Image (cartoon, rainbow, N blue to C red):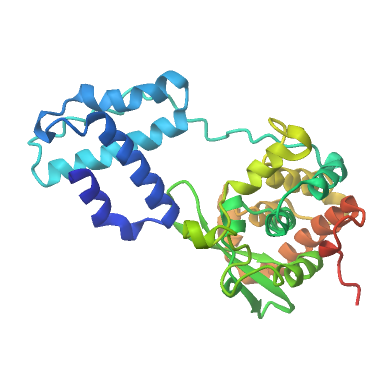
Amino acid sequence: MLYRAKIGKEQGNYTEKTRIDTERRTNAAIDLIGGVPFKELTLKHGLSVLEPYRQSGATAELKKRYLVLKSIAEYAERFEYWEINKWKYLGDDLPAVNKNKHHPSIHYKTLPEFMISLARANISQTVRLAILWGLLNATRASETVSAKYSDIIEHEHLPNGKVWKVEVSKGGKGDRLHLVPLSKQAETLLSYIKQHANKEYLFPSTLSKTRNKKHINSQTPNEVIKTMDGGKYKGTMTNHGIRSLFSSYCNDNRLELGLDKEIIEICLSHLNSDEIRNAYNRAEYLPYRLKTFQEWATYVEKCANGLFKEIIADKS
């Protein structure tokens, strides 16, 4: 009960995805050591929860499960279930997590071939539109699938266009607002999305009646990419790799296209320098972001070569 009480007291601090993941990891710990009276738990018991992930080399998951146990231990000490924190040294010698994890991605010059595979894929139109939306806007899958109509707004710094408000929650650092100005292709796509969306979400789950889900699963775009054309892209392309495509194309061609390196990073919601942090929330940079997304969307439309009427820019 203590494990679940910990989550219950703090669930207001979690996003829905984080809450579900934390409960899953907590329940896994209970399966292993839940039968042991709490006062009898030792460092060895905590290590037994982590050891499978240490052995398999799953360092990111190892770190997350350690943080769950660490939080529970601090709770136990604070409320005197333990006189001392028995798991204080649980994290000693944990292998470092590679924060620069490589996400497989094709080269942007092979995007036309990828678009053919996407057009051929035997998937629902909602999922196909979601992948196209993420491709045009270079967003993470979780951000793409959870897009709401209420997130599409008009902005005073873009009087003739729309902006998508994205809540970025990454690495446990808390939510921040990321603004994505919509390219002409994205605005065309939005008009087609409306034909398949519900009143709240752009990409509603087709399983919502039986699974109580409000939008398609964040893993669905990645699974589709892995299985397209008989698994052609398994190990060579992921949904997150779309962001690498965007970055590579814009940076490789930025002088020719008149793009700015820091604006490209801002378009990806990367805050990896003081200069970028200072510029991130300045609304006057929105036209420069729009130019970046527009150049990329024009390239995507060219690569699609008429396969998707949904992303043909309105020339009117």
